[in-house]
Image (cartoon, rainbow, N blue to C red; front, side):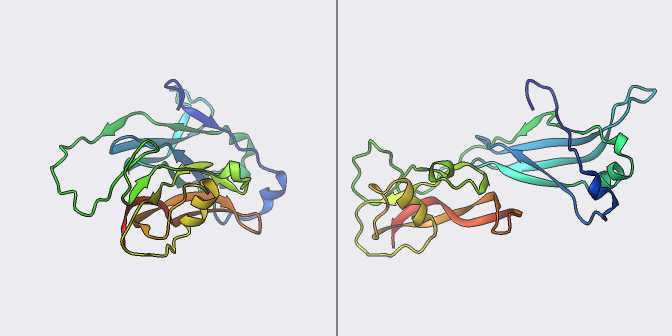
Length: 225
């Protein structure tokens, strides 16, 4: 949504598919990351010719999504019926509007809790020698991975520092860390103790668009294991 105005999306279809049976049709929308727990309300509207009462759209679906701080999310909406109507009556295809009327923010007091097993967080200026989590942004475009549609980059983080126990990392995240930051990549002794997935939209080997959750892509916590 830009400057309070709803975003309109128009999809043009080839006449070749008008005689085919629509098996599935989904509209994907991307919700950007939030800084605090937030409830997002989204309205998906179908544009129609103005009626006598001035109505210019009809509702397709309303969404209420609870979002947590971190990466953005992709959300799909079933538009099979809408597409079928468009194919039967092409002149009715005036587009779709996506409205984000307001946000409901949830605020709670932060309870005091133990730092046990929460690991250390450091930055590039830190003098900490113990096992610590450092920030790292992986840029897929910099790698030349144009088959990844979204996200183009994400915060992966990595572990580094001294540790008593030797542990060989087995997460796929390690491969990205070595490519993005080969000089400061994580050693075999300091390892992620908690990792989380990211949602990704990409092309597979058959050039089909795939949406999936890729596990173990973000380091949330580091420690000796």
